[in-house]
Length: 120
Image (cartoon, rainbow, N blue to C red; front, side, top):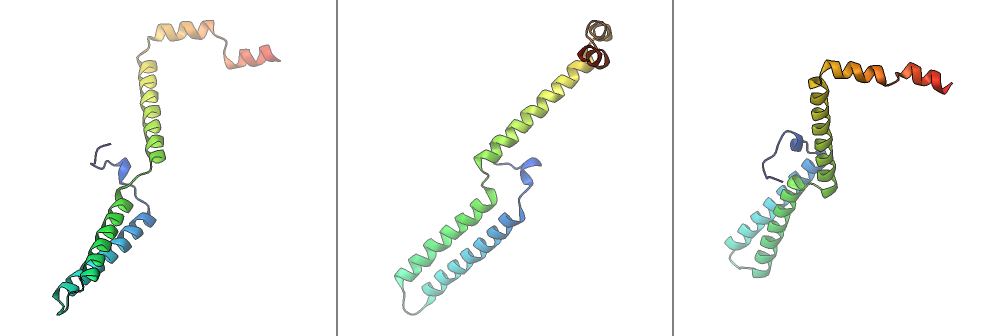
């Protein structure tokens, strides 16, 4: 799957958008804390490292919340595209069929009324 979003892929639920915003804000807070710890008189290396790692983890979480799509959703979307393409090909084949062949098939195959009468 390409990384470029198409019209079908742009539909992102409001829950995923909210999760992305929350995680991004938390990542910014962690990066801000990292800067604050670096500018402090006493360097707290564990706090600096911990807030930097947490900020990166939250930023990655925000990115995945926005971009990740489940495999089941991708398979369902692909099956839907294949079915639509097959329907389009079938419709084109029916439209391009010779009218004489269509009337010959209609004459040889029983219609719905004849089938219902034969079953009764």
